[in-house]
Length: 139
Image (cartoon, rainbow, N blue to C red; front, side, top):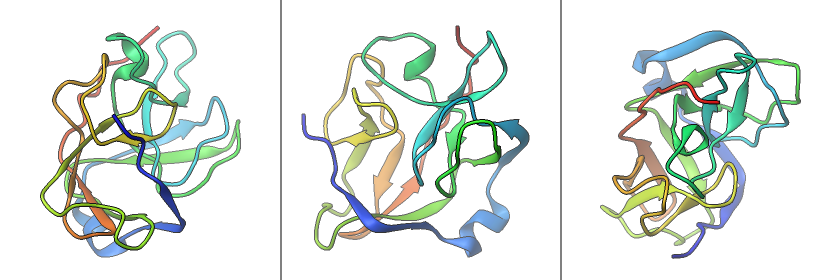
């Protein structure tokens, strides 16, 4: 397993985001990184960065954060089909699957305890596309 090195200029592609499923009207429960896979915590209804150290709610993904968001601020999550400039130059292998990482808000090159299927597809050496958001709320 290897965490993907996130680019300093990580960003969401607004063209794909216009047509992607979105969940709006949410508040961040912690500081969220740009392009972080996130889940909605059942206990408070707020958004937290997914963390696949266990096959429980924190390992699920409701969508990806479009930008860095401070705790308590509004956030919209973006789902299937959204493209992000995610990795540093030549950091990804096209057609590779990425998984929710064991570090909150990060993606990994190998399956993890909480994500054996994968949530993103590498479409270039720097870009990913969201391929799955399972959307379960968690504890």
